[in-house]
Image (cartoon, rainbow, N blue to C red; front, side, top):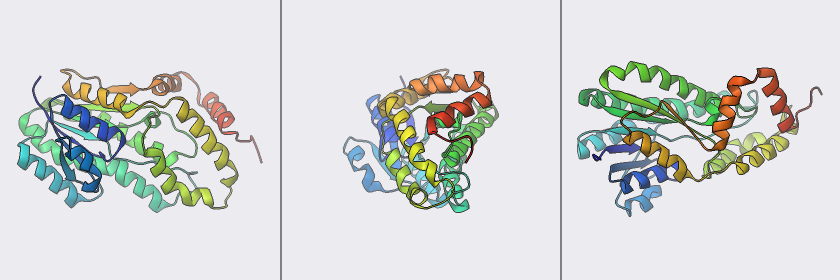
Length: 278
């Protein structure tokens, strides 16, 4: 197996960190990135090259990609993993909060792929791995901003996959179900304002939070499971266009295609304990 140069975003914890470690273990040259280089100290100790990278800052993206190209001469695979979840009712989430969600989860990924595609086209090969979610296919009430951002990333991936095919560049989407990471802690941090404020939806948030935690805990898998899928896709001669990881993703996404919207609405309302009327 030939060594590949892999750039991974969002490596401070979770899926990104696990992907960097496994890629290194498999003999690849991995560049792990995060907003703060200090968060990557543990990876540097394992011999992984680390880069400070803020996906919301164009200058930071250009500098990071330039540093990888300067050190390795090429980028064979990009793993767009950086992201977070903004929860709350559609009406409760402010427009700046909506924009911030898309700035990281969608435009951050776009900045990276636009920065690496020229060198991939020149080499006539490469793999773009976009880490989406089961939420990129199934929308959950009170998680509209996060789900919308992942739906957008799926659409970008579908368009890009056909557009870059003439240059032998592959585009892969990863759709994990619930994974045991620090993602939930970041989500609670950015959603705290909404949960603590009074409003027309505040009476529903406690039940929604409990239902979400119950469902996520029931299906939780370790980030190493997703990392194995990502690295396998990069190494594959003909990777799938999509990989669903963990039982919830494998069950819920096909169910979405078979069931009616009304049926799914009823199931979601029952799970969240939402009344039919007030």
